Image (cartoon, rainbow, N blue to C red; front, side, top):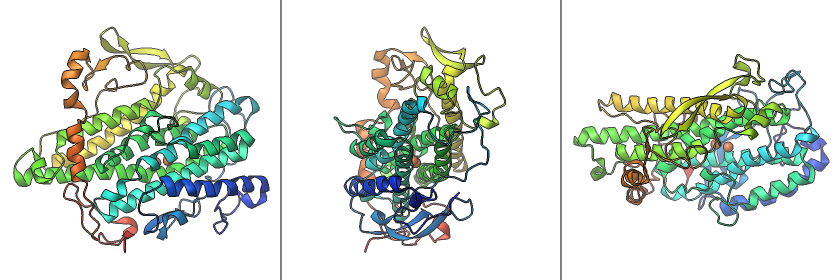
Length: 472
Ligand SMILES: [Fe+2]
Ligand SMILES: [Fe+2]
């Protein structure tokens, strides 16, 4: 383990200066990254000072340093979690063997694809969110958006490091391609569906950070178990950053819910739109949308790819080492939701091909905990409404439910019923226009837009009226 080279042009804890070839590859990529960041990163704020945290080491104490900087000057770097001495592969056919420090030749293509797919999501979300700065509900939120953005940029660096360090020429080509695809582009879209959706307003942003960044957490957690040790260590450190993104999402939606409840009580009405709030039914529709598109990111319920990733030791389960079984799963089964004629039913399937569904289950449980916390906010306000997660078969575009229409309660319905009810379940153009109409920037220190409550506390112990972004 080398010390952190924070003063290098590319801060790192991977002894970059001792690897001339890799250093050259990354130094060639760096200006292209910055060009991408200037073109596709936060629009209109590149020259402003933002109060950001930067990763400066990987130990749990003090890995972050807070201070003002302009985003293009952010110290994007390469940080891997500390190596675990004598780490062994924890699952699959290679269980018990020493973790790989180099890519096993026969798994090269598969592993590269896994890394590229993860890497592609990182710049995609920056692109999706690049116009949100114009409509921020407060300086506090603006700063949080930018923190998420620069860290997604760093996650891209993390994946590009792996590609350049371990995959030779193919890896360098993939690193270039990561800067060429564009979210939502017709000719060169990002790889995964949810990362080509628009993030037009802050309600969508908070939902995205809650639901879609959480998919990232589960993907990273399974890759953190990988037998390919550099990938495992990279992902372990990325998870510490990811936690903040989900915090932004959960507290963002929570604060909107809180403000809605305040308006409901104050005006004794459920229709808070008249008072500039976002009504609970609209929030529910956004939950339905973002949850369902995020579920698709886990892939098909039955997947031989997922089985292969596991058997080959490339991608484990969430908290693999804590699971109490043989970590090979050749004879095990797992209950998977499936279509049984007109009903959704559970069926035992071979555990290996069911690993996508298993990861989705862990994810759903985690999402439900967050929704329960939003419901506490509603209950504390004395309001008798609950937000819910829709059924996993609702509004799916991937997997066994993609060919049927299913209600949020999990009832298979006709196309006619779907057409009649769709607008009750998913955001309509009118809902989006209403939410859009609320997106007026609030940039006065300590002030918050009318549709969202102030947070419980500031960033890094700073007061609420701190100048989180200097606009002057
Ligand atoms: Fe990320
Ligand atoms: Fe993230």
